[in-house]
Figure 1 (cartoon, rainbow, N blue to C red):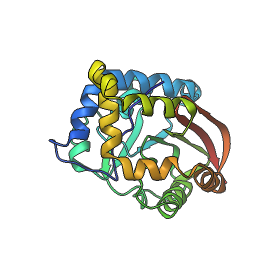
Figure 2 (figure 1 turned 120 degrees about the vertical axis):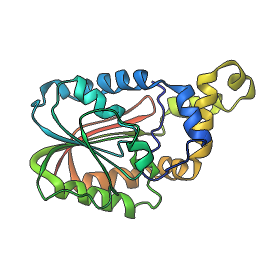
Figure 3 (figure 1 turned 120 degrees about the horizontal axis):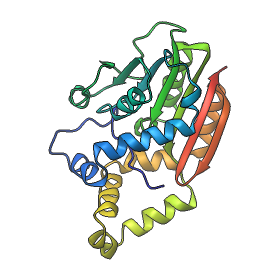
Figure 4 (figure 1 turned 90 degrees about the horizontal axis):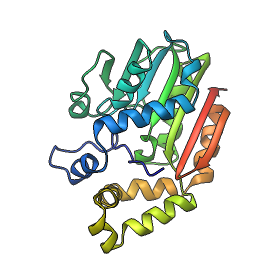
Length: 227
């Protein structure tokens, strides 16, 4: 399904940023929360202990945390580089302004680490990705796991990107115009990410043993345990 790339840690922006305006045209907060609930359930959240210590990295405005709360989880934290985005979160989870390449948590202290569309904003690959994964590996308990959902160059995504750039499609569809606008404003890191699939999966597999991995509908879905 066509989904918005989540702009968080690497791209803090003022409230007037065209990306933010496009995001709000593309998907309401409630729509995103419901999408996250469906996604988390597909990745096995129904079987996770409700007292698991869960951290969402690149949490942005916190809609992923709201989704986790609605699913019944009670020990939640969020991390993002943007104090402005974190300030938009209205919930009981503890949100921390920090760099996900240097996590403010003790060794082997968390059960689940989730990233929903933040890794593809890292400016320097593979160095930033390796550093982020090293920190995540350090923080996870031995029986913990990570969940990643990131954009991926599949035929579906390529089709959507081409179509969304057509002026007549942008005029007819506000959602497609919003998607194209977001891509335009995150293009350097977006292209860098989509252009290096082998490198990205190699770095991921060097840190985490895949439990589930799929590439479909423009998304990389990964669940893994620390090596």
